[in-house]
Length: 199
Image 1 (cartoon, helix red, strand yellow):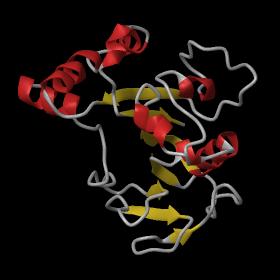
Image 2 (spheres, one colour):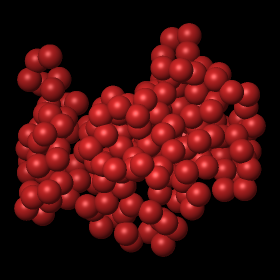
Image 3 (cartoon, helix red, strand yellow):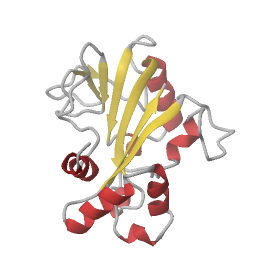
Image 4 (cartoon, helix red, strand yellow):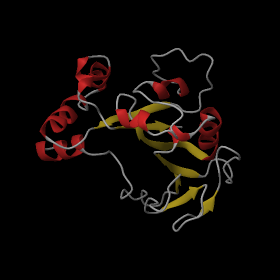
C-alpha cells in the first residue's frame, strides 16, 4: 500500500453507506434509515424509502431464518439498543459461519457519544471482546460469546491536520490503538469506532 492510499484509509472509514455488498454475497443493513448500503437488505423500525423490512429489534427478533447472511452492517444503531445481548444473539443467528458484522458507532472518548439523549450505552476498543471466543483480553466469563473474533478495529477522527496525523498514527496497529485509549492522546478525540466481528 502506498503512502497516499494509507493516509486516505487512515483518515477515513473502513466502510460506509457507499460501500457495496461483496459480489455474490447477501448483506443485511440493520437500522439503515433511508440510506441503505448498496446491495444490502435494509431493515429499520420506521417505514421510509429504501427500507425492505420493518422490525423493531427492541421488541422482536429478526424475521429471517438462521445462517443466511454473509455480511451484516450496523451503523449508529447499537448505542440506542437497551437489550444489546439479545440483539447480538439475533444478529449472530442470521449470519453464516465466517460471516462478518461491520459495526460503526460513536466512540466513548468523544462528546458526541454522550450528547445524544437516545444513546443508552458507550463503546471502547475492547467492548466487543466480551462477545468473542478468541483473543479476548477482558474477563467476560458471564457473557455469552456470539462471535469467533474481532478482525478489525479502527478509530475515525475529524478533519484537519492534527486529526489526520492522529488517524495515521493510531490506526497503524492494535497496540497503538490501545495506547491512544489509555493515554493523554485522548485529548484529540476520535469521533467514531469501527469494529468488524467474524462469526
